[in-house]
Length: 160
Picture (spheres, rainbow, N blue to C red):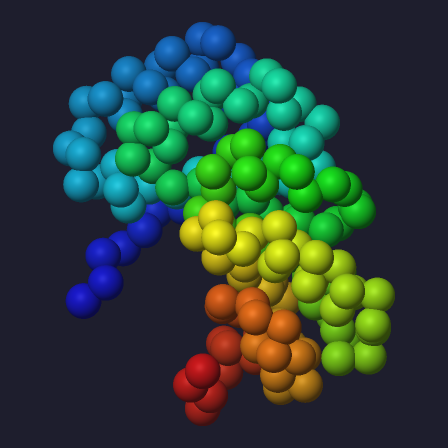
């Protein structure tokens, strides 16, 4: 069976607080290494990009300890994707606004293609959040999205 991953959505402002980081790193150092491989920190894309210089060393330290990194709300505001190479994220979670009716919205498909291109050869998986219809999911799969979250998958009679 697949080990459980514990995902912690953490504020960028907490990651810039030296006292908090010192405490967090100390706590993580006390955990067994295999457990750290099952801990994932999620940070918001827009604030990550805004504070990239301050966050780069902190995220590097967390990833270096074995933790995983997810960037959420990707594409909420159209920003450069250059940060993806710099922070060694494991997952990019597309904002639900990009996913909604993506089957009818060429500009959103183009953005997702661009995001997937930026992740190529970096071992980063792109996840669609807020998937509600088969049509959305079909387009997302065709584009190359690795996984999806949303109401479509919550229904008991559907296995995807």
